[in-house]
Length: 66
Image (cartoon, rainbow, N blue to C red; front, side):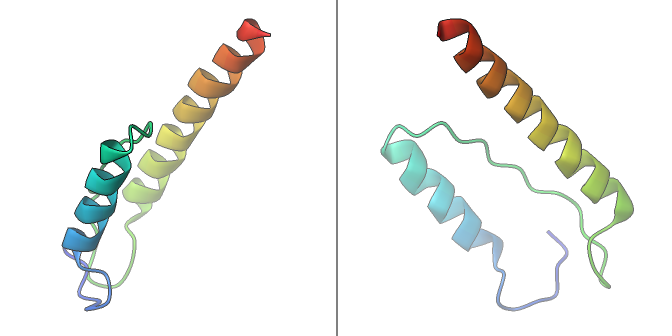
């Protein structure tokens, strides 16, 4: 949210999320805090935890469906 890079407006991410939801895609939209000098260490850890949870949910679920 606090990213001072003018090429990464949050509205672009919000619009992509809405477009994917409109197509009934499985998506999750999150906004993480960002320091002015780059991605905060806590944000990296949170992002990795979210990715691991997503992979666990969808890969384990697909494996049991086979």
